[in-house]
Amino acid sequence: MRAVTTVTTARAVRGTGPVRLGIARGRIELKHSLTYWPDIVQTVVFAAVSLLVLFLLRGHHVPGTSFSLGSLTLPSLIGMNLAFSGVLGVSGLISVDREDGTLLRAKATPGGMQAYVIGKVTFTSCTTVIALAILLAVGRLAFPGLSVTAAGWLTMAWVVALSLLATIPIGIALGSLLPNPQYIPLVMLPFGALTAISGIFYPITHLPGWLQGIGQVFPMYWAGLGMRSALLPPSLAAVEIDGSWRHWLVLLVLAAWAVAGLLAAPPMLGRMARRESGSRVAARRERALVRPR
Amino acid sequence: MRYGTREVLAGLDFDVRAGEVVAMLGPNGAGKTTTIEILEGFRMRSAGHVSVLGTDPAHAGEQWRARVGLVLQSWRDHAKWRVRELLAHLGGYYARYATPEIPRPWDPDELLDLVGLRAQAAARIGRLSGGQRRRLDLAIGIVGRPELLFLDEPTTGFDPAARREFHDLVHRLTDRERATVLLTTHDLAEAEKLADRVLILAGGRLVGDGSPDELALRMSGQAEVRWSRDGQRFVHPTDEATRFTRELFAQFGESVEDLEVRRASLEDTYMSLVREYEQCGP
Image 1 (tube, chains in turn red, yellow):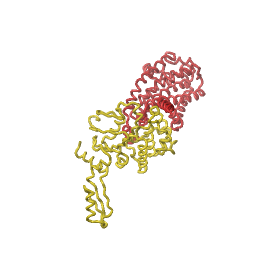
Image 2 (cartoon, rainbow over the protein chains, first blue to last red):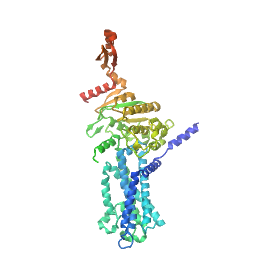
Image 3 (cartoon, rainbow over the protein chains, first blue to last red):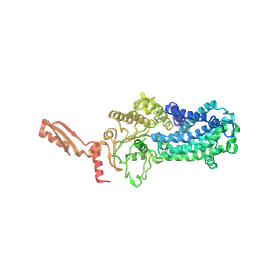
Image 4 (cartoon, each protein chain N blue to C red):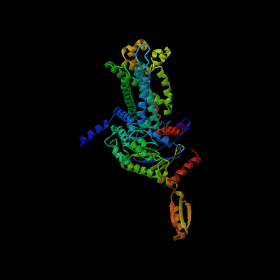
């Protein structure tokens, strides 16, 4: 009898940690997103618009080569999408969760905030990889010249992982700063401008030097460059800065953003979460109700 | 407690004993929500000493959080989740805080039966009615078998039937689990029905503290006697209801009908305490 009690207690005390709960959370949210039609429509529309853009670029050639601009842009778009889901996706999710009280619920649960963050990382990584797989599958059928070698898959793996690691913390930090979801366009606008100077739709080497400089500060350019290096034939490196894929710099810049983000995001999220309370969530709702739509 | 230079709570001093159900009453702006949020650890205080389950909530960790349950004014979270799914998931966070005395968490199916949501187990939370949503909130509040449960205006917006059901639920809960409950409400009948003890706040100060009966006794001087005689209704406020009634019968005997002696209710006490405070100021 005594032994039985001890065993039960030992198991109960161990319980499930925030990491496993967070992954479970991300998995459940992924399931909801994949069965929730507005989310499905959003993913499909994004993929369709991307492929349409690529299709329109199909007839154009990368300057100085006979390579299709559409094929060049596909990996860049995947790189852009990595930055989009990490920064815009996560900050949007956080500001919505803050508005509806999901974040407060996490705060009211023991270990809830840790699991919340792990859940968001899991969810975002999965949705990003799914979107990437769709783009890649359809893109490889529609566009010639994209051949992935074993080394290319390996490059893709570390570029995707590192890009998410570099951008998700930025998303968490921005999401903590946004007072409510109405401010999401404020993040979206500079993001659009950044896309224009990150060499996504046209080689960055055709921009003025100072814009190239600004573009190279942010992770989007490096995510795109990394993806191009994984998916394009080596000869295409010629249209890049220095005529090289600059793998070490891709690694270094993305890792630097990851470290900076991982240092900055938790205290910012913590500061925001500390100030959340029932009356704050209620007050925001009151304001949301009177806000003109 | 101050917001900027405005003092919102002052000289607030009370204890809640284990197993007690305490209701906090007061007009809007009296500081009820501020008080409860300080106790929940969601709001930092500018001064004073607070101890909840032996710990200062401003610096409490996850272990403390596991022993406390919350039902806030209105939740809209996790709208895409299914009812049972969320309950089972949130229960998971409490498993590691189980003790031989308190098994945690509560079994989700048992809990759904308790709050009457078995039929909605697979429903999307965003599709629940207002009353169902609040019952789910209560279920989430207690899924970790809290030793202390905060209910912040739990029945706001309820229709009378839903309110009645919610009260029965809280009764069942406090009888079965012996949980300590601190609730805020605007509904005096609710406080009278649920609480062992009532705290009345006005202007950030405690102006009344006692059981609903004790508080009503303070006003016992003002009972009201109603009767009818020869088809005519009479009302007479009196300090000594018993003597007045005896004299009434001595004088009119059998012609006194429909006799009713109304002692001051909690509502009367509440109104007079708050009015007294507002007239005299702090």
